Amino acid sequence: MNKIRCLVVDDEKIAQRIIIKYLEDLGDFEVIATCINAMEAMLVLEKESIDLMFLDIEMPKLSGMAFLKTLKHPPAVIITTAHREYALEGFELDVIDYLLKPISFERFIKASNKFKKTIAKANKEEAFEKKQEVIYVKSERKTIKLNLAEIFYIEGMNNYVIIHTSSEKHIVYNTISFFLDSLNSDFIRIHKSFLINRNKISSFTKEQVTLGAYKLPIGRTYKDRLSEF
Image (cartoon, rainbow, N blue to C red):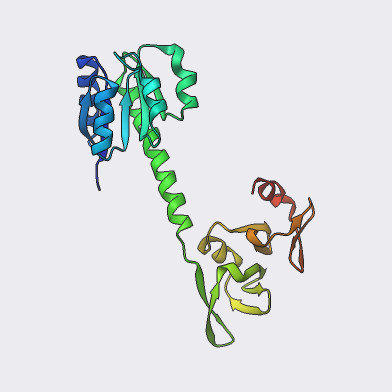
């Protein structure tokens, strides 16, 4: 597993050493560079791929907050500062966490775990979106290739499903739960018996979804989920 590449930006050498020691103790982080001001950090970011930046606020020439606002594509950031009053501004800039000095190792671990969870979630969502654009199903003794974009909805019937497209239907021996787990995020469940392609939705009410010529009921437990989408 590749280590998490870190940049430490702080004009206090003692603060730098503490963060470096904490990262060494955690083991799965690698300090690529340390900087005492934003100008040095900018040069590092131009040359290096950085996953996580530990950023102080009160620094000479340019504050940490001002520096962060100049970055079009900043890495993930954990603020490290003795100043509590910038916390709201920090979170408005989507920082991972806001650590107040002196930083305890316990609090540092919590912040690093928060970063790991954020990355894990992003990786999971990216992998989910990259799932196949076609599926192969067995129907009537044939293996059929179906483009997901052509599917309107999938209807569950015990151990079978019926896949409905604009022009045909395919009866497949499998469960609707299997397809929910296998298909990409375009497919959402609106009823215990119906899985729909949300790109095909023409309109919907609290009780019903219209997908072209198809009209399907919305299950009571799925109403809130559909509204979110």
